[in-house]
Image (cartoon, rainbow, N blue to C red):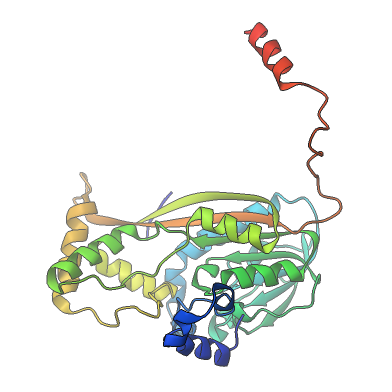
Length: 338
């Protein structure tokens, strides 16, 4: 589709320090598992979100999140039941919950680490809304207290995804769904490639300019490991056209999707930026034949998933050896029909 424009703070700090010591390389793998990898700077991401939410023109940069939020809600519409309590994890401005009505949802619990974005989150007047300002990595809710969990374009900034998925599973009631969307590995591959080539040419090395993203198979593996069943995942590619690389980077900042990797390059010099823009245009740019306008594409790969907490009412596979029809006989019948 083409559009037009956890762990506590103390524990996380301690783990980060410990992983930089010689002792870390001598301990067992099972012990290392207690210290999730620190990939993203959550404090920086909270600052990005707060800054984006405080902008007077913040609604101008919501086009991707509004579109993905609607697609997540549309998948919830396919679940033909009424939900008592819905948790929207990393709700932003309410890109998903704004589509729920009283015939579908009685109560929405909106969770967001940014106070400015959370203040802007609204749902329909006849739906009860409770707002909670805390980090998605530190989700703490009563076990089996939620009928549905949704999340749209928030989880790709979480360091401890296995732990987050495990806590979501715990708060869900049996036979309840987790419906979400997160950015995938091919997101902004054009920007990543242009910046890497420019850095290699002008700076003599490659810096981390675009945050890493997960792959579809990784999401499936982590959800299965957490204990979810009946998984479905599909991939959307949303392509947005921009006049140049600079407008893209400006909009990413407005979306609060700018880089937050802990090892990110904090500064790009002017020559590298200009070289990257030229490379971007040369490799991926196009010119409209009628208007003569120049544009460059930016791809957002969106991973949509639906996962279910096991329940007694869910369909189960039959036991091995319980079949009554031989596949050999079935094959001969099909072959004879052809």
